[in-house]
Length: 216
Length: 216
DNA sequence: TAGATTGTTAATCGATTAACAATC
DNA sequence: TAGATTGTTAATCGATTAACAATC
Image 1 (cartoon, rainbow over the protein chains, first blue to last red):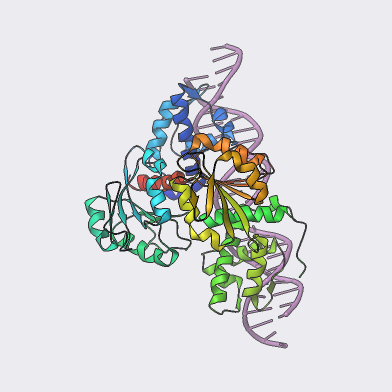
Image 2: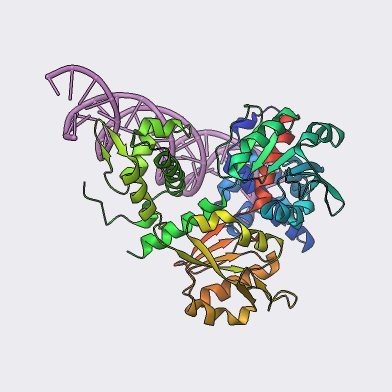
């Protein structure tokens, strides 16, 4: 029953974390549907996974199941929310309020999981000074002050490739420890800073690759 | 020297394709900088990869290098563009013109690699009928006709989760063989249709996980 | 030729899956 | 208790890396 407290973050495979997110969503749905328990087998089937994989993913963090029964939906959901850090609100800073940046700002999915974009920065004089949905768009020089004042924790980089490293350096300098980067460049960050890249063009290229190959 | 023509698509690891995209970009930059040749070692160093991995990735598709020299930058670039299907233009259809959809439409990165969003669909009466940058926003019922007329090849799903499966079914029915999905749901598609999911919330959750763990 | 670097085979590593004793 | 399902160990699979003969 005891939850292992002393695992190393680095030991948890990235794919395990991603699957935990997926399980969590499923459990939220199951809870709404009034379903009380679910087995690893049933959970796995919904995502074409192996039941052993589901159990192993969970086993990194503790023993949440009951032999002969499976997992209690709302109990497991609560555990996973805690593990993923979704049992609290995160203060997110968005840098870059172009097309992508403003879309991310208005995207409802983030807010729903507790990611609150509470600061926006853009050095474009046409944007800095404006207000979006009650959030002021500020020039980057104000970042350090705002990061402290609003205890910003996660940065989103949505600026052009050329500007991305400079922006990242300022985020790091202001104490941000996690960055989600949408610019198509490899950013350098200190090793205590978590960096995740989302490269939309590469996603499309995996598709054009498949189509180009298929056409042979 | 001969390029192997008979490999199976399914045999190429996804991660290999993603790295090919990255190599290609690097080669484009190197070409602009006037660099003529590059070794697998030099290429690998730029991305913290292993030189054997670079050579192996390329070896899936042929022998592009010269022993003792390395790879000719512009020659290899041209080969990779062909392999990735980036030596041509792709007709992309965007479904959903909300915040995310309109951002993707205006995102310059796609166009630059030959992905042309040449049709937009949205059933919202406030949007259907409008024109965005010369592209008419049409109701979904026109999809079949437009798909034929414009030989649409790749679909982007940027609608709310509830609408995503319905939209996908219509894309498939209209003959689209590759779909990039931004809705946070597992879509069902026939097995000859390529599906790639981009889940922005999960990306943020990998960060909140790391922060939450680090905070223990 | 001597030096450099490829393409490829063999070794290593890590993640997925099968199998099963433990136990509700 | 009998049946079901967990948590975990061992086997399998696939991807990464090291090593090296081939060769420019």
